Length: 198
Image: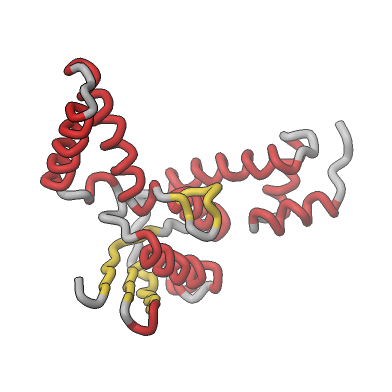
């Protein structure tokens, strides 16, 4: 196997923010392929995030984002385990970027479970009516409605949304990458979005 160069490790560190040893291991496992090593580290980050999910989070930050000359604003609470991480620049940047993302996308909740059942029911009825209006047969109507409903839920839940600053990753993946990088459980707890006149 080819020796992993320090330059390649440096490139992977800059791309992922992971530690030197993690980068060396990823590049070694992926035979020096930088793109595969990034994926390797992301998968490892998911596993790390799952392990940390049960830890208590009593620290964090509340960040705001104001847009359109004060006509749109967001407050978001992001929690972590320690005050050390709560003051970390990467953590604070993440929270600020999440507030900006919420202003841009107007999610209905953080997770699918956060979307009220009455909204789900109403959307399902709309999609069924649209499919019936198009003259689709009854046995296809429910499949069409469920497909559109799944897309609606994906687009409406913060963690499922494509990140506005990098549409190749979701907010959930961005969060897991940060957990992997910082080594502590992090959670988007709640948010509120205000728009003048709404």
